[in-house]
Image (cartoon, rainbow, N blue to C red; front, side, top):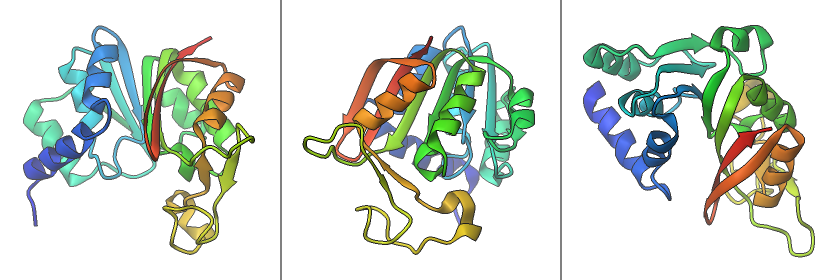
Length: 211
């Protein structure tokens, strides 16, 4: 079993393969500003929250429905970090009140796992003081039908979704295949203006200004 330090390093390498590297985006936007990472724990162990702290964020808060992982807690202690963690659901207004408004909100790998993505974006808007950086797995655009989304609760309805839908699995289920144009439209409907977009074949990261 790997110790926490190698786990964090493996996470860093995986994140660095994004285009552009996610830590670069965080560093560019977090310095001198407060920063919140929503969905900070699953498979990344707070790596982006720590990256924001390294970049000079004035205050960093991480939030997830799951408890802090041992890797996160070990790295937090090793760094003498001041990253604050809130365990809760982004759709719970009381939990969001504990997070509070931050200049920059990072949320990646969450939206397609949420049954009501427009509500998710509205909740993110409520804590975004200036900039939202949102990453999501993406579906290809349908020719002649912009702003479409695939509802993917059944195997075979999405290229990356293979396991059966199970309501008791909650956010583990993959609910949506979101096209880039649908994401832009939902962000606009939720009070954001997209100012930057980065794509790979099955992923999009949007940088959006709160308006």
